[in-house]
Length: 118
Length: 111
Image 1: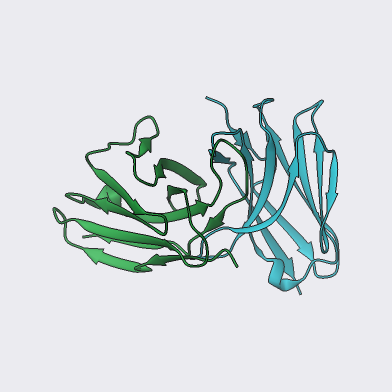
Image 2 (image 1 turned 45 degrees about the vertical axis):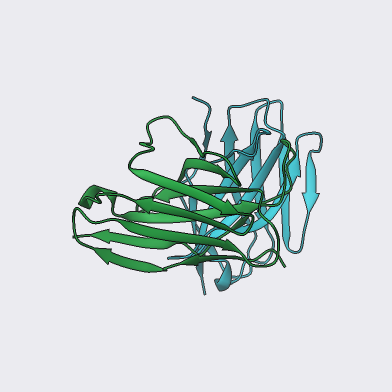
């Protein structure tokens, strides 16, 4: 159980275009989802917390107009990288938890999306 | 801000030996500490977690030790296998769902 599907696994886009990445919880309802980015040989950096039916909470330094997050249902959150530039090239990873109310339930991670902006 | 860091960036062990991966954390308010394994090009995979009121927890071939006095966390892997080769991250959760990752240690298992 607790499977998180992320799509696409790889995407190449032209500079200035937008790219949408999907994160789905397949066998549980994810009240909260998280988006991370990871540069080569570095750790995962939390970008934002996505709560179903409400606005995402962004970490300091993350541009909310650049990285649009939508969590319209309990099984789907999307991250849209708008007007992508080469420096946005990275590995984007989502995670999901059924927990709510500040209680730790454990997290399941997606398989990641390798974004390359050319 | 608060962060979780690691003592060793790389670790090379012989197949069959035990591995110990260390981590230092700075947020004494964290409730849970988690170890993840990440293989190349994949998302992190949960290994084991430990609550802040415990000092040891064992899983299958893995043991996590927590020393709150010195804010230190370790992951012990028994009888390390080639399939254990990966990057290992410690992470901490401080309620409100945020999970903050440490820098990672790459484990190489020599056959």
